Length: 70
Image 1 (tube, helix red, strand yellow):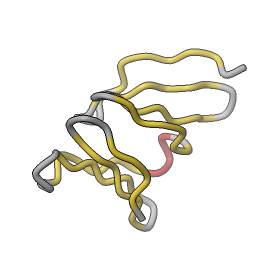
Image 2: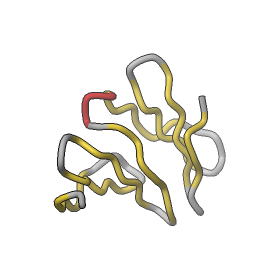
Image 3: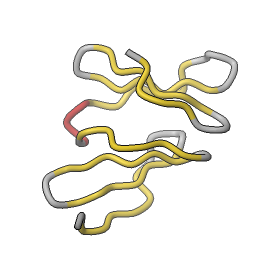
């Protein structure tokens, strides 16, 4: 199921994985669902919620920020 798309990539949820694809439909990376629950995508980043934290990842699946959820 497609979860969302940004300006340069989109995310598909398959089984227990999030698959990241570039704008041409080529898979960039797969990351496990255990990183958290998908919240949003914008530009070249996406956000997942894990417990009481919001983690921001870049389009390559690298965590770039964490902050407490409100």
